Image (tube, rainbow, N blue to C red; front, side, top):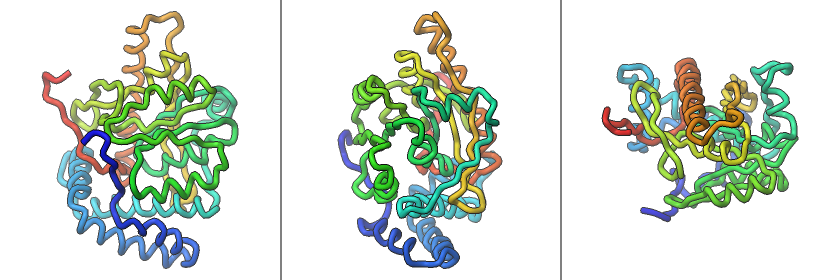
Amino acid sequence: MSGQRQRNPGPDWGFGCLRWLCRTLPLPILYFLTVIGSTVAWAVMHESRRASREYLTALHCRPPTTCESLRQFIAFTWVMLAKLRAGEGAPVHFDWDSPEDSQHHDLLFGPEQLLLGTFHVGGSEFLGFHGLTESRDIAMVRQRRDNAGDIEALTESLRGKLHIVWTQSGESVIFPLRDLLADGYSLAMQCDRAEDASKTAVFEFLGARRRLPVTIYRLALLYGLPVCFCVAIPEKDPMRMRVKVFPPFRSPSGATRRVGMEAARAHFQSVLVWLEGILRAHPSLWFNFIPLQRLAPTDS
C-alpha cells in the first residue's frame, strides 16, 4: 500500500539487544551466536528464504542447496553486526581495488560532486557512511522503516557529514534529491530495486530481462555529474572491506537527452555484467531479499 511504513524483520528491541551484545561479548562468542540466530531466521523467514532460493537458482542455473541459502543469511547477519559495531566506534577499513594513479582516484577521493551507485551487496552500504565522507558531504536515500537500528547506529557517529533522505513506500524522492544536489551534496543510491524509482528501464541481469531503476543516470544527465559504481566485499574480518570500482559514466559532451540516455543504459548494462561476475565469485553477498522481477519477452 502506498505510504505504508515497512519494517525490518525481528522485534522492536532486536537492534538494541544486538548493540548491547556487540559492546559486551567477545567476538568469537558473538559470531558463534550469529550462526545460531541466522539459522533460526532462515527457518522462520519464509519469504526471504524463498527470495534467496530464487536468486541462487538464477545465479547458478540450478536449485541451491540448503547450505548455500543458509550461508547467505549468515553473511547478511555478519555484515549487519559490522554496521552495529561501526556505530559503536569500531573502525572500518577499506582496501580499494583501483590504483591511486587511475581515473577513479581523483573522482572518488577529491572534492568533485558525484553520484555514487551501488547495490544491496556485501558491505556496500558502508561506502556512503564511512568510505567517502572525508572529502565531501554525502546524501543517501533510505526507505523509512519502524525498526532501523543498524542505520541509526551508523548515522550517530558521522556528526552531520551525512544527510539521510528518508522515504516511504510509493513516495517520490526526485525533488528532494534535486534540492540536495543543488546544495552541493554528492548522492549515494542503491540501484537494484525498482518499486519506488522515478525512472526505470529493462536490462539483462541474472539470466533474464528485468526492470531496474535508472534514476541515478537521469540525475547525472540533468546536472552533468559523473556516476561511479562501487561494491564493498567483506574480507575474513567483516570490518575490512575490499572495494571494487567500475569505470565512471560521464554524459557525452553536447549529446541530446536521448543520446545521453542511450549511453547511460549501455553503461548500466556493463555495470550489471560486472556485478554478475562479482556475485558468481561471492554468491552469499546478495542481500536484496525480495523476489526477482522477470519480464515477459514482449514487456519493454
